[in-house]
Amino acid sequence: MKNKIDFSKLLQFFREKPPALPGDSIFNDKFCEILVAASSAEEASIWQLDSKNQLHPVNGTNFTFEEVRDVILNEGEGIGGAVVISRRTMVVSHALSDPRHDPQMDERIDFRTHSMISAPILFGDKLYGVVNILNHESGKAFPLEWEEKLSIAGILYAAALAAAGRLTLYDEPRIKDERKNTQFPIDKTVVVGASWAIQELLQLCVKAGRSDVPVLIRGETGTGKELAAERIHQASKRSGEFITINSAGLPETLLESELFGHVKGAFTGASKDKKGHFELADEGTLFLDEIGDMSLACQAKILRALQEKKISPVGSEKNITCDVRIIAATNRDLRKMMEEGSFRDDLFYRVCAIEVLMPPLRERPDDIPLLVNYFLKRAGAEGKKQNPAYQLPKISAEALEMLTRFGLEGFQRRCQN
Image 1 (cartoon, rainbow, N blue to C red):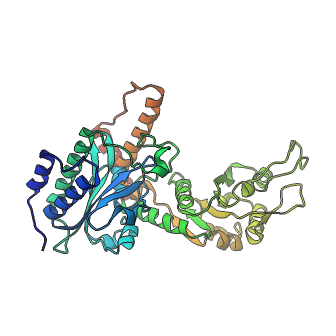
Image 2 (cartoon, one colour):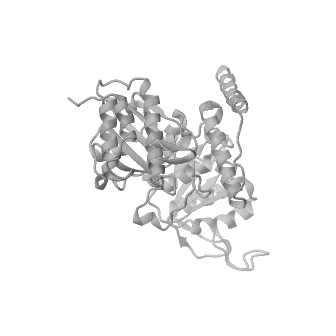
């Protein structure tokens, strides 16, 4: 039986002289120990952000740093990753059935998460990471008041770090040289959302990335199909680049040249040899956007390239071997197109080993405030680059409520139809 203490003991911990410099393992261990006793939890842990907005476990009551030093949660993935996006405390009552829960940490330390609360370690606008409590000793969900209490604990911990000058990014030798003090790197692929729909999508993207089979992403225009494709590529072990081509944006003759390349003199204007997207994506991923807009002739050439794993540049009889992972996307109904004869059956089954469905925003209206805040902060980061005195843009509560209500009404209309 654990020695239970009152929440006031946790508050007192931050008032007294610290046992070590805030952020050091001795300080963190004591903080987690008191947190477990106060909340009647089985475990508490601290995760810290790096320069890529990835979370790393740095302290916990049930693991050592060496056991988990290679465990990483990407921004938006898992409960902690969702907290990074939303900067709000999140409560999970049934983790095993919640698609937002990432089980990799459980698997690593032979632990099973049933319930948890994750809170941002936040000081002002500076996000350090997240603090978690897991599995209430009753076997049920944590008492409702612990959502607020853990939020307070996260703020107090962040304030202690700030006072000690330790409110910094995760710093390990392998990333020390690339540290950048920004919360929204412009070149980082971010799928924003804490809803069940988007978290389930992110989990599927990670699982798809761990395999090497072709993926078909379906969804309406603007749902983020290319972002999902990039996340799949990032989760893979492929060493090559992520290359994208929009099949709808090019005429058939030019599309063939873009895909397979051409040699000098192959056609008017071909003044030199040019590599195609297949060759550029060698050992990487080729994203074929709007594959449903390809002509049947171009579909046949794509199929041949996938079957033989070889391509022939326009105007050349030479074959080039390419090791390419295909991710295709469309906003059209390819199965209906197959019935009509406008899309090849054999190509469909070549590109659709795994199917990913992108949820439209109207089906996840809870993500609207997160998206608004994300884009405001991103715009602010750009403005700060140009002018350090730039004032970060804000949105009124009334405007945010209007956007959320508009999205919710759209979802309700869709459900009625």
